Image (cartoon, rainbow, N blue to C red; front, side, top):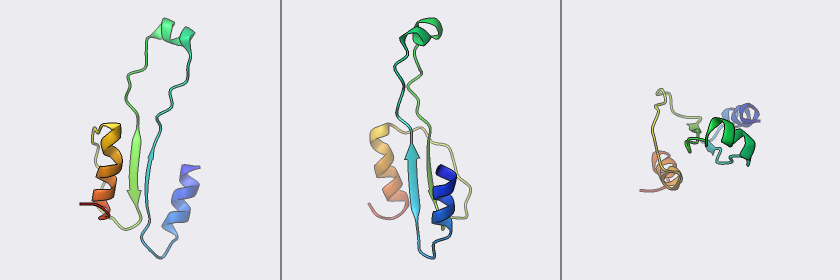
Length: 77
């Protein structure tokens, strides 16, 4: 699904940006008892169809992600 969405955004003739993250951790008590609790880290990706610079990895709190993304694409100071 993400690849399909990215492909559609890449084909646009106007700027497009996407910030995608997953915050769902399923409730699996038996798995957690056996292997321990999840780390709490959540992967995310911010992408746009106009930047040619390579991406970089950053650790951000979930509540900071949308603000950071909007600042990077110029919609927020």
